[in-house]
Image 1 (cartoon, rainbow, N blue to C red):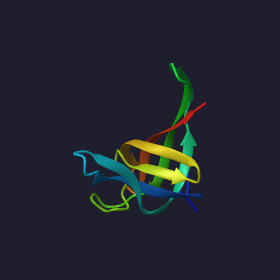
Image 2: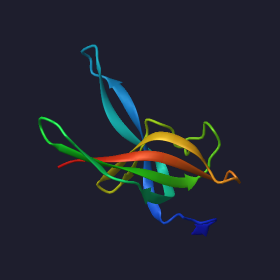
Image 3: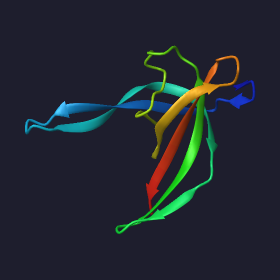
Image 4: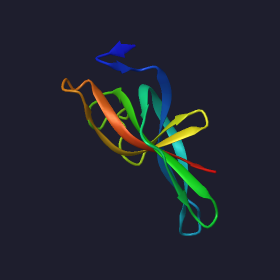
Length: 114
């Protein structure tokens, strides 16, 4: 659907991290699906970083979704992530997109070890 220059054509799963006690004084983390959102994904400029174990490449993305009220489970927040098959986009910031308040833009990063 095209709405005000935004094409919501990608179906993404919004996930949040959950923590469960590991019975050893710590916890384990797992990701739980919160729901599906239609999105417009826009790539930024990629970068590459070398480490001792591997080369890490990452590309910043803007993921645009329909706005939801603050506190709604369908409203993305930093620390959550979008999943599209094998691709994972971690959410680092969220802001309004456009002047009418119908969309949110999520500033994300996709990381892959090469």
